[in-house]
Length: 401
Image (cartoon, rainbow, N blue to C red; front, side, top):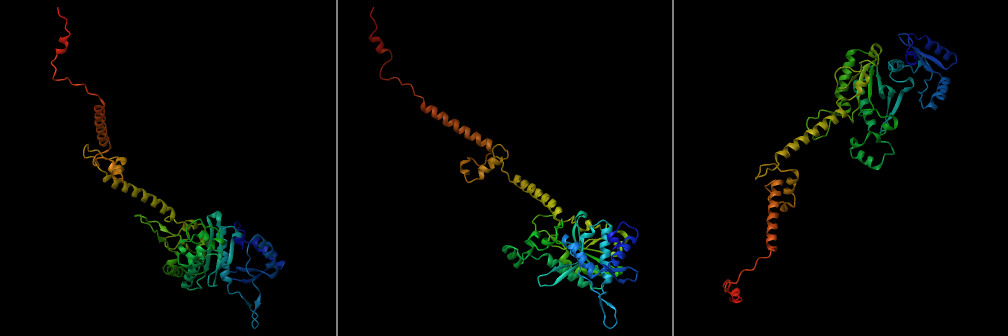
């Protein structure tokens, strides 16, 4: 509570004094004291009613009331078995908030995610921190009380939940889902987008496993099982493209999975490089681990380069096939090439010559036709009669002297 409500304070006196004041008004009570002397505080029934009046009108869900129940034989307080786990959940939220990731009212615990078969997968913690670049993050806090394969099943259930459709989905979308074409359904049409904002990245809502109160060896073994047995849920796919040289990966249907430990968060801070993304080596900051530098942005860049290269290659291949004029040796222009290969190629004259040579042929034909036309239109001079001697008629009228 101290780290979550007053992260800037170096001591917990102010938080403790406020809790004692709430206790005096019978709004909170101490449920148990941990081995390290940390106290687990919970709301009383009265405090729970007051909190609901304060928070629920603001759209903030409040957790269920922790009732005080005692063993009838021993008188021991019951229902305290999850105290250590609850403390780890609260400490995780506190470390995130202390690092400036998420507002303290942006955390929810025990958030239900109902699956198609009626099973409810409850997230230990849900954080909404849009100003920190993490619009939503689902967190599972594990103190190694669960088998590693149970964590794989949790991952599977989150993946299935992320692919569910809302009850009022249109008929075509339901038809696609019933025929196994869920991948072609956009995230905007899925149920999770009715509950959480867009993540700003490819894929389903991200999931983080935070391990607490355990050894490094156990964490390493658990992460290995998660990585191998849960690959089909977290791993990206190859893009379905005919372009060569595409190394980008398709994260569209994947659940981004991060792992860290509460001890790392407490020692280095949640804003440090303490988050490891399944499928990657080394640890990164939270936003860097969630980002996909080899995802859709890279794909668009590689696809654009590949399309440009294909265009250059096709242009080179076309250029190599460009006809050459058999008369002058010049290459055909695109226009002349099209003229000689179109359906009306019979109008293009000699198909083996280029445009200028064809124009010369046309000009010669037109000149010859014009000359023939002129010659046909010009009248010829009458020829002299051959049976009359020249000058005979003129001599008949000559004056005698």
